[in-house]
Length: 106
Image 1 (tube, helix red, strand yellow):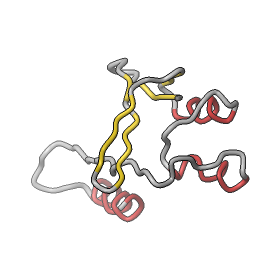
Image 2: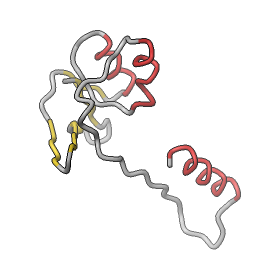
Image 3: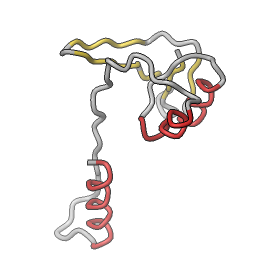
Image 4: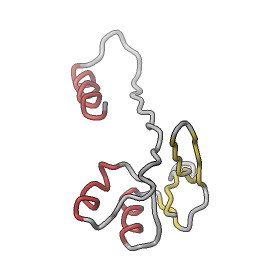
């Protein structure tokens, strides 16, 4: 397994899989990195499997360089939060960014 760890906390993130209401977390890994591109490169070089957002591995999947495994298992959705200081009015730039991100990432 090729894992990911937080550079800020130095804690590894478990690989999380769900299927039919069953959740499984895998914490054991052979290699870890705090860089998503580095994680994908380790997988490309055959050092293990990892769990990545599809948008980042899509080019490698499309060319056949990587193939999906455990496709019947899914990772639960990741929470995505916008945090900004409270004020009476949001700036037009902030509102435009939030609107764009909601459209882009759902």
